[in-house]
Length: 129
Image 1: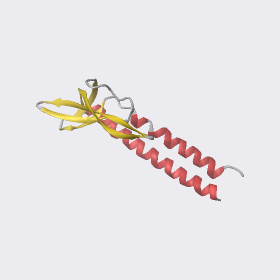
Image 2: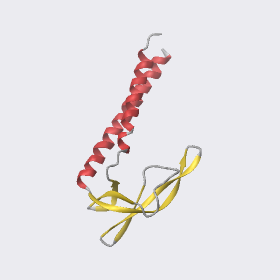
Image 3: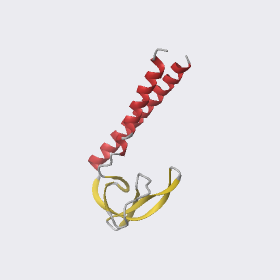
């Protein structure tokens, strides 16, 4: 009985993760289609937590017309991108401060986690003792 309850909770968690992932995928796909691509340059870093140590997340700048905007990397790393390195981004033509990385695949990584939770939940909830 205890395994069944835990399994159902894990299934619900997995479904929630999948729902979030699909919503995030749809939003990002729409942005990739409608935003304008440009190049940003890595200009600095900010500290972030990386397991038991401190890592860095890069900060890149891009210029639209006469204004300069910043975008932060999605991942924390102990080997961040080099200063001056160029990265492709896409920005909202109506609000250039709203930008995403071109060909960002990070939103794809959440869906498999949700599917794994669902499978594990079914195994816990419906396995024979």
